[in-house]
Image 1 (tube, rainbow, N blue to C red):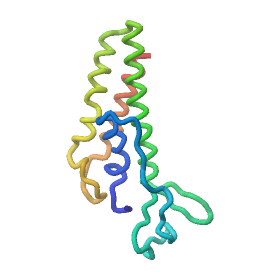
Image 2: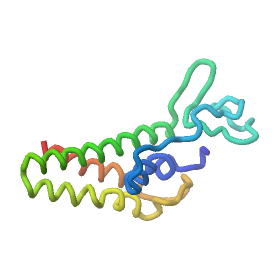
Image 3: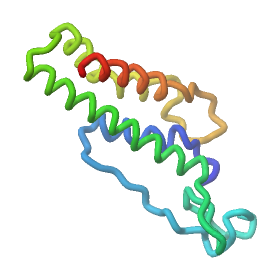
Length: 147
């Protein structure tokens, strides 16, 4: 699991969900550390699979968990823009800004998911891991113009 790219495997899940019209997503394991310390995985027969580093002293978020958090924030940004578009349209505000926001929202997931090698799940695969950040910034900018 540690060989999987946090960007492609974890962060982009929300973008896939948005593209498909899904209302939710989940990860199958937050606690499976294969019975060994996540800080020394060489003893594990298989796994660990948790995006967290678990030990008796506490829980530490790994890059994978941070990517999950960012993924949730990405989805929420998409949903907030969709809602702002609906409210702005209903209120008859700035039709040009609404059209620009609609166009951005309609193509946002495709822009992120069709970036070169975005579909490659291994960390070693070269790719632009900034695309989701760039698109989210544009979504937030559009959101601010509709308020």
